[in-house]
Image (cartoon, rainbow, N blue to C red; front, side):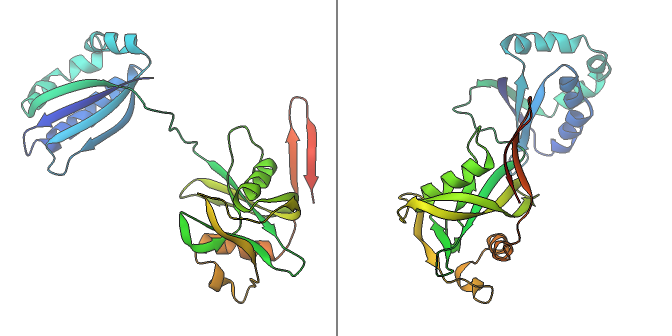
Length: 252
């Protein structure tokens, strides 16, 4: 995508008029010619409007303005355009380039693993970015990673322990953040318990129960995951491939 930033300086009190013209004419005209609106903002005193547009490529951008002038939509809006232009002090365009790939999926997938030791204590960690609570070890999947592999990796990275996944205990969908979470049950099969430099502190087994959970876990959604996991009610979960279909693993 070829992205262009447009900065429009307007006369004070002209925002309502220019904003209405934009939504009634400019936006639809751009969209019908294949241009995507990345975002549009105005400063605190409503005198500077910033727009970022995405064109198919540089040639699309170079051809766009002549293409626009030929549309019926543009020709019909000319009287309003002339009236609207009186509010505009200046208009500046700048081609911009991304400094990295920051695109996020609409829905993100994360995992946690519920692990107990021989004393019935639960494996919990304290992350550096949520240092006011303990929580089950886990995190978001990497690209091209299945949920079981991701769960195993996260426990290893955060605690130093190797685990095997034995089942699914709880799943949830945070519709605010878009995060879909799977909380698995696992057993320790190796490794050495330790903190993860730069990621977690206080990785260890804790004598957490339903009665004292507030002592260890302060975040509501983390508490919900842990309490559901502590019920130890297995859910059916299949890991499979398609074309051709192949059942990789089935958890009961």
